[in-house]
Length: 255
Image (cartoon, rainbow, N blue to C red; front, side, top):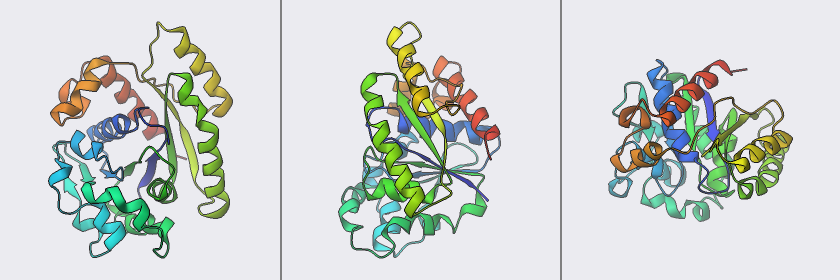
């Protein structure tokens, strides 16, 4: 049975997609069977693995909203052995509105992932930078939540709102949802600000901060423009080593 991890933070630009793509890549490199689900209308996880999501006629939207397709019918292989992708496409942009009146609207992704959860060791979900119905579907479908936090003070401002939303989900929709931890991204060890953010983050996630810290790294920023994970693009850079370490931590962190 797969561990289903939603990578979530309603703030944009904190490294959710970078974390989703590269964590998925390294988990597969360690012999895990991985499905990456792109539920972000921007489709960056899909393009980050080399797919032009603008040209895709079917993706996760057709599974959630229209319902003519099962999730198995939209899953595609990636260039990495053991890593598959359930992609986004342009249709997903209107999904938050279209989901409103659907029955079991919060459980649509969860219901579909149950069809394939025995086929994978890990299912990672790249969530949108919002707390709308797509993100809600992502969190309800998950067994665990991974929260990337950028090393700047603005990134901390929305955490209390996110934790409140998680509490509401635990109380009303998914009692057993679990915060796997927070991972610091875009860390600059020379900056006193990064160190201050790291210390303040402990107030939100005592004993739940990954030791792996993702640095600011040019190669990490370049890789998506080539449709590659950092494992494919430059496996020897600092960013690659950080995601390799994070993948090892995630494998060992299961309850």
